[in-house]
Image 1 (cartoon, rainbow, N blue to C red):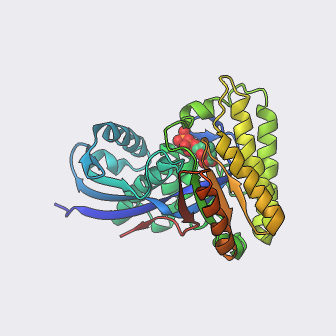
Image 2: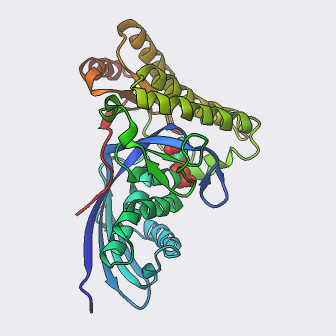
Image 3: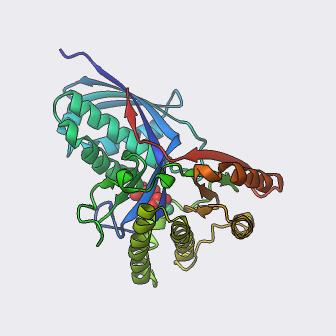
Length: 341
Ligand code: DP6
């Protein structure tokens, strides 16, 4: 009888610059997306594996048994077992928690699904069922089945998920790391999340992606995203923060304009979100500081700036907070991807 395998996995969320919006087939993206891997906003998952003739899962969230999450995770694991059959004979006890609060616009599905995928793939490596050099591809592929954006959390600094004209090795099934090709300025990127509204108001990803089916601007969105990816790749390579800012803002606002012109239509930006955007642009015009923003499917604003702009930008953000434009600020930055102990 083999001794149980115990692992502690930490896996981060990520923030997309070119947005994944719209699916095709089974969990495949309509367009290629690019994101930065975060460092502070992460899921910490303790996993214990023992061999068993039949599959079983015990799942705890924040130290309490959680049957709703348990059912979800069980379904995902059984889907993963098509790629890693040993899961069918696994007795798993998993205990998970996040370092960030719920409903802040930080993608908890990205950190949780990447943690689950990375952890189970690591167990496969320890059982000699998966080669170490296949760990990232397998984890990213499984993470994608859990939640599309989670496929991008597996890599240090930055990654790309989805086939595109510019990177031959890119795939719809798993993301690839591009951390080694980006200019050092982007490796110090800070992400301060201005929480405008912490009530659950965002469009769920299932509903959101469906809005792209039959959308009147679908084709133009897909061309725009592909072109933005090219501009972004050049900006990342050359350390061109101005071009990076243009792409980040166009993508964030295009995501929202797609939602506004969808059927049904969603307006998720609040007056405070718009005021923050104006203030950022005003501050940038006045000071020439390196600062930009992105937004996911909700009202909260991710303010992006390199470490060199930290002092001045954070003073400016404090003023926005003092003016009552946001309820709190969560500070994060680019990080080095999942770890297992
Ligand atoms: C707006 O990855 O949450 O954050 O695959 O259905 O789980 P599912 O969707 P999800 O969608 C994320 C959408 C987004 C943009 C992005 O992260 O690229």
